[in-house]
Image: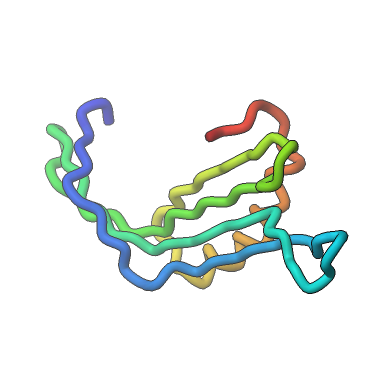
Length: 108
């Protein structure tokens, strides 16, 4: 809705995190993080003229790839409504790699 206003957002549980990386070539005991993601369950209140106030539940997810220069970093965000943290946590494993398959420009 064009007049929708978010009144508040609350994180409901501890977010889940996922990282991936590679060993540094000159020191195999150091891991360089090349990908990162998180999933955070939320509740938010939104108000519109037509429908009044509603509370929405879901999970906000974020994933980023190419975290080491000189590559072009790519970020992607998802707002999945009506899903739980376990569902979103499972999607992180797919989403952290699907960004590479997508064309287009990187978000920052």
